[in-house]
Length: 489
Image 1: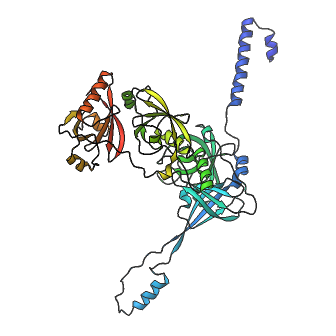
Image 2: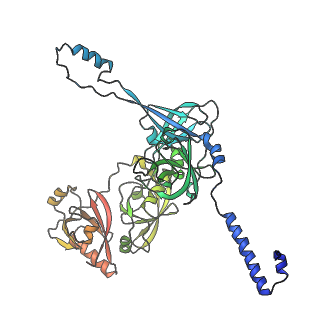
Image 3: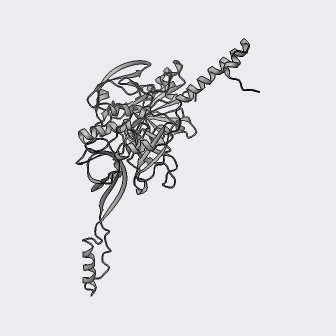
C-alpha cells in the first residue's frame, strides 16, 4: 500500500475522523512544547568548567606545631652520660624535639578582581601562613581579613599585579531540588577537580543557629572544603563545607552553606573585619500543635517568646508569651527562620514585629541591637515570692510554693517566684514532655503564678474557656521554655 500524507488523509475523512486527527495533532504539538521547556541533563559541563575554573583556588596552610617534650630525669645527675643526653636534648630545643611545621589543604574562590578570596574558617583556622595556588599555576600569599565561626566562613586577600578572574554570588533561594549543580575544588590534595550532581535538599541545619545548607550529591571530599558550588549559570550558590560519611569519603551527601547567608557575612567581613548581626533580645521556642491549641492559635506557626531579658525586644514592648508571627514584613514559620532573618537585619534598624498576644495581633516597633555585643545578656528580674506551705498534685506533677529551703535546694535567687516541681509521675504526659523534679513553673495560661491558688485559677479559666490544655512556662537552671499539658488527666 502506498504511504499517504496527512493532507491526503484529511481530504478523505469523515467529520468525526477529522476531529480526532486534529485533536491528535494538537496533543503532539503540546507534548513537543512541554519537552522543549523541560530542563534536560546538559550534554557537557566542559564549557562551564572552562569558563569558571580560573576563579577557583587551592589553599595550603602552614602551622607551627610545638615539639614534643622529651622524657625528663632519664639519666641521674652525676652520671657519665649526663652531658651526652643534655647535648642531644639541646639540639631539639629547650623542651626536647624542635617545633615542626604542619600543612593542611583546602579550597576557595576569588570574588573580586582585586583579590578577595572566600573559603571555610576551618580551612585556615590557626594557620601561620596561607598560600593560594591559582588555576594558571602561580601562587600568592594571603592575608586573613576576617572569619565567622558561626557559618564557618573566612575572607582572605591576596595582592596580584594583574586583575584576577573572579565569580559572583547567585541567589541560593532560586535553587530547586533536582537542579543541576557543579562543585569545584582540591579533593584529597589532588589539585583542581570538578564534580557534578543535583540539589538533593534545601534549608538543611547541622549544628549552628544560622545554618542554611544546600544538600547535594555532587562528590565532595576532604580538601573540597571552602570550594564553590555553582549553578548552571556559573554563579556561586553555596560554599562546600561538610559531608555525611561513615568512612570519610563521599557517599553523595554533601552540604554547602547557602550563598544568601555567605554573601552577607562576606560583606560584613570586608567592611568591618567581623560580623555584625541584628539582635532582637528574646528567648524563643517553636509553636507545637499542643501549644497552638493551648493559645487558641489556628496554625502551629511562629516563634513563642519564653523570656524577654533587658534589650531591644523589652524596650519595644514584646512580652513573654507573645507569638512572633511576622518580622520586618516576613512571615515567621518557626524559630530557626526568625533567628536567620533577625541576624540578617542591619544593626540599629527599626523594624515592625507583629505578635499574637491573647488571641489578637499587635504591631510593635523594635530597634535592633548587635548580637555580638549581647552574648552575655541576663534574664529579666522577677517579682517577690509569696510563701505558702501546702502542696498540689496535678497533671502528674507534685507542686509546692517556694520556701527558703526549696530556693536553697534549687539554687534559686531569693527573689524567684513560682511553683517548684517536687515530684513527677513517670507515667504521665508531663514526664514525657520533659518536666523533672527541680523545675520551676512561673506562668500558667500566660499569667504569673506565685501560689497554688494562682495555678488553680488559671486551670479553671482554661476549662471554662473550652481549652483542652494549659500552657505552662517552665524554668530549669534559669532557662525558660513553654510546655502545654492536657487538662484531661
